Length: 74
Image (cartoon, one colour):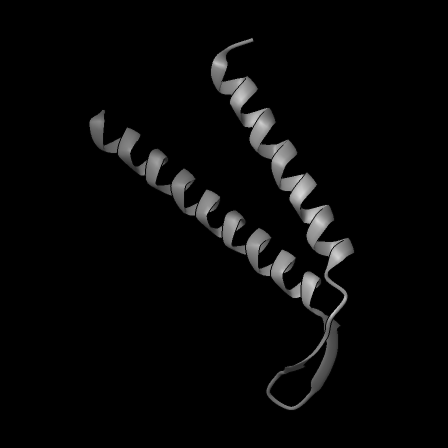
């Protein structure tokens, strides 16, 4: 296994572990105010969803940048 594969596995494991900790240990209810609706959710879920959505958006933008960079080099 290459070092990048091991590093990727460790980062993924840490994200899963800390996601579990945030989800289990943080049981505070907050009121999420949307445009016309108010939803009562746990703070851990809000933190987890915002982190994962930000990670996915960053990953997608990095893929688009890498594919655009490869095309400009050819």
